[in-house]
Image 1: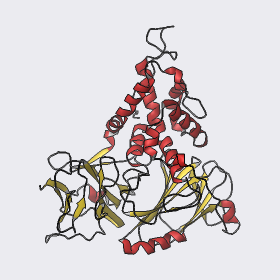
Image 2: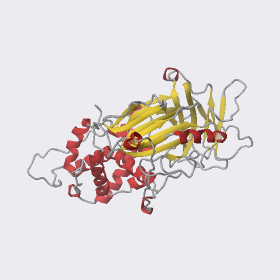
Image 3: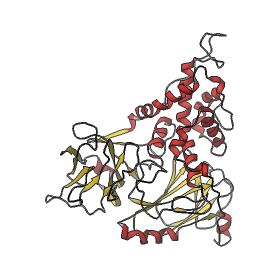
Image 4: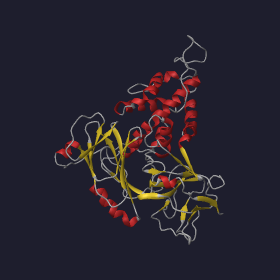
Length: 453
């Protein structure tokens, strides 16, 4: 079993020793353990922060809704969207932040004529279910012992908090009314309301101006005590998995665990500076620890299993939560990424490129593909034509031989048919292949990016 960081607190071999704190561990060992605990807890804390922002409203609007109510997006994400990094611009989302601590929530999924699935994530960012068939489903705590009505399919969730993400593929702006119709047929209500006939009026939520923040910025700005006390409180309703017992035993030395109060007494020296240094290094550390899960696809790379269902791969889980919260398992989608051209040079808006496809990405029936550009901040790039991706539904022009060339440039060309706007500085690309043909993908030649100016 791989470890996030193979570092343990040094056992107390002497009654006292210069340079050790009151736990008996050297300062460097303490910070190694703090870093490991931070990596472990980060997905839980950022899920909660995202929930806080997304439910910070009295009534449902296009980007927020109270707990246990639908957030029906009315359009695709754009450059102003800041709730989740690297947002998808292929599908219109319906989301809901569920609290199933009091009773199960029932979801009615309608029939559709297009790609439409629902991903259910637990509080630790693991995918517990993907629903792709019409029906009636009940989201229940794993240890719930009640009975469900006939025709209702049980979906067990190990945590009280869950994130419901429905993705409905869109074929241009003219297709929006069809997506709205699907959204309106979806239903979500407590089990008790469903059993009483389905008539249900959801209660009002609350709004607090202090909860208007960017989740990743909020979490990364937390001091050690705030971060770990938040994690400890969240673990009560969202218990760690049984497989986490070994690491939790270690973290107990810091008072990190369900219901504990973080012990700042483990620190010596300049705590604020050491904490800042740790956070500054965390992304690089997580990427390095997750390198073993990458698959090279030409000049592109994507993350393989167990993405979306991480088990004890805590560094991998934290890296995905930091870079792309809500990632699917690979049977649903793969996300090849590149930030370099065919020479290995970093992509920059100071140059113009052509992205050449010999053949288009391989998908199974009902699948789709796209390539989306993001700035160095992992958000969509503002541009004059509001185009953030090229996909299989775009009005691009193929070459005479059936190949495809996409222009990557910050300046608008005369013919915009095949133009994907990029930023003026560093940028990167994500390819999304939904319902991928994994056998074909092994032998597929991915697009090559070459400098043209």
